[in-house]
Length: 214
Ligand code: 1Q0
Image (cartoon, rainbow, N blue to C red; front, side, top):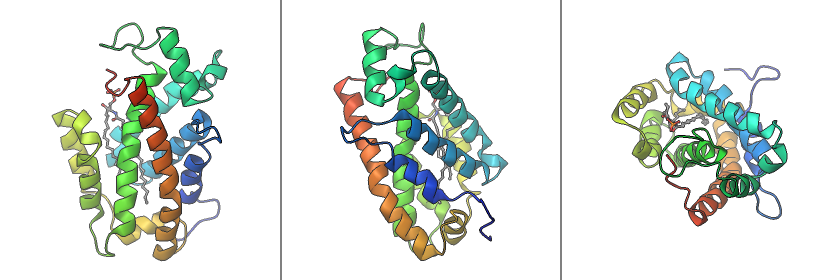
């Protein structure tokens, strides 16, 4: 696949996660959501079979974008500010979804869990042999992360979709960052930032006991 002009490169998407972490080790929601937007574009390019996944991701990104662009946007500049604001205002449903079914805290938690999948998947892609099966890498990453939070029917649909993934080399090519070696190198550069964002978020959510929000 030729790198068309202006074509989407995964490099910029992953750079968004690098731009998330401030010197004070806060996570900026703007670049975080930009990163997710880019990943969804990438996912859409993989075919209609993934649309049930991208629809859910887009719905969650939109919820967050409306907070980030809304009246209380200052409270949604960073993840830390959001958690403070929503918790102190009683804006988070802690036991079951009722008055605040779409809090920023529960919405980001879903993306956060998916970020773990992304981290494992990219690590897998980076270190796998050239002829490795991406559907196997994807399945393993999914089973080690998101699957625990999904009901049977979603796990089944995901398993079917994963079978449609292209080969590792084709995947590295659609990343649009050059040859497979460059793609592997880029993943090596990007992964520490993704791990960092994941780690900071995980710690914040642990501290506030938000890891099981309904
Ligand atoms: C490349 C293959 C992509 C595989 C993505 C793995 C994730 C599978 C997730 C399937 C779940 C979709 C259906 C909805 C689930 C919701 O119930 C669930 C919970 O939400 P709620 O409101 O019901 O409590 N939602 C989630 O768990 C959020 C799932 C978000 C998934 C976002 C995935 C975005 C993926 C981007 C693809 C990037 C590929 C980059 C690889 C580049 C390497 C060359």
